[in-house]
Length: 418
Image (cartoon, rainbow, N blue to C red):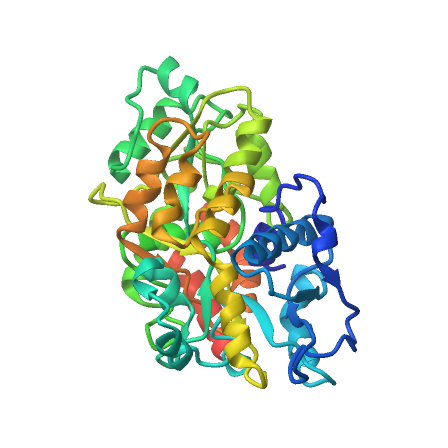
């Protein structure tokens, strides 16, 4: 089980597939020409493209990019999101490999050898990286070089039920929120079996909790660092929300993220830590006012773990200048504004952030902006799937107080490293 694709798959809210005609969906063994070498043919974008939601998203991206560059010619091919990370390696070794690829910041290290360093193309084109969220650019950097240009920058947030807070006489949290206050609020919102916070299994949300205090699970050099005492302390404090503070129920290892999400949107549980890409889905499903605040930190200051994706160029692409021009159009301000308005993604272009604020509750955009001012990308390793699987397995025992965070982190670190 991999929480990254599971969460990503639920991000896409299908808003119709009008405009799909703008995209040529090529076969997986594409012979469309020009994907990697032949001049004159379309540039092939290899990405997660199996579902209607994915296809509609890429159609929107490409139609927006063509408004910037009418001569742009891009076709799309690719498997499901979960299959993409293995099949992209095979696809690039086949005939007529694609030039354009997508990656997540969390997976950039894993795909590093497949992605062309973009620094020279950035300099030659005059592309201004200062206009792009710095945390996402850091996440797309491998061995000191930028490998993809991000199109979104999603700081993990705490969603809450405004009416539940008001009914309990609690002050609504905004762009500052201490852990002490959060636990106090969660206890006030907990009544027996009805808990204040919903949890999902895995390491994605605990990692966001830890990074809110500036403590990563992976070093800047890309080494797994789960047994770092500071990280262990963060994990223990997260387990203690169940085992000690009793403000949440221990998730089951078999639970998908939809279990905690449905508990929140149904009104059964008034708080949930998730990505802001879920705002639209939550607002549609819930019959209460949706509040947004930071993942609580010890100091109360906003600091975020960001997750996001972007466009890169295959290392064996023979048309890199054309490919980078396409990336410039695909990540342009107008495209990102449209994506933010239509699909609710938090854009990687700083100037496009006001477009995400449209239709959100008061203060939500202020929270996201505060988080992005001190953000760290979700940094992972090529063995992260194993980390996720083992945390899903053993984390339940941590929540129940049967194992300590130190025991669990040591087990995971040794299992993955061995």
